[in-house]
Image (cartoon, rainbow, N blue to C red):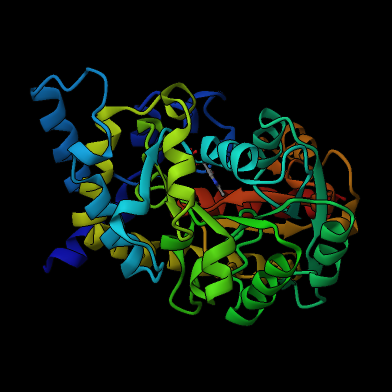
Length: 392
Ligand SMILES: Cc1ncc(COP(=O)(O)O)c(C=O)c1O
């Protein structure tokens, strides 16, 4: 057996009990029998390089305050990884922070016009709204264009209107949580052109980019044109791709050189909360974790197809569009109503999902389902969803 097939087998055979034993939020909130498919974490064993790094950290008792970027290999490791993914950034413009939402709050507060609202492309990651609230700014929701095929595209007219009305930045989730949309080069170029013309910043959360499937291609926003590099602030992390959100370490990357001075001028308190275990685990993930990630994507792609085919087989194919990235299925249940969908899933069939309304006004009538779980759980979910949809 080659290493890759061995890895794939290990990922495929990891089951819910293994995850439950971790004692984290993923399977820790509901009694056995309830399928909690809301938390965005994968039911997979952890990548060996990450585990080795953590074991080494424990052996060394790496429990003190963390070193800054300059005193570790964080910048060179993360810089190389980001450039390999197409982001045109130098090592010295890559900084660490505790988590992605912290980077978004800081970017809004310190890199955009004081007091200006933020144009948020929706449906989007629910914590964007609180990150903007923490920054003391208002949100202007700009829904994507939802096409009859289930695909979403940027509503450039809507974004332009928001900017003309005073928004000082655009917050983009690229690729999109929850819709799995992978934006095209052309869309992103148009967005950059708009932002440049209005003198505003685009904050691009690219945390799901490493989880892009073989039939799609992630384009880093900052890479699409010189204007894009200038307006962009990119936030990302190893937390989604390697399943380590509890380790508290994320990445902010500046493709406008003068941003680096601003970043350095911010207080350590504002940028704090980073775990030294997370720093070393992130370095291990991005520099040695690619084989694990390749195996994870292979397995996730099968799970994605399995979910779509299983829904299709029961006549519900129209509620899902195969995502180009992320392990999140976005189910369009508007035909069944717009309110309390997640509540009804929990109450009637014991499935806990994220209600679409948490992802912005445009999310009403949808639910989000995490399919990064054992195939038997996906099958059980489909059976329960089928029972509910038939009863409606
Ligand atoms: C788009 C997006 N950004 C950020 C995060 C959270 O990342 P972190 O826990 O590293 O802040 C998530 C988590 O699901 C996410 O989907």
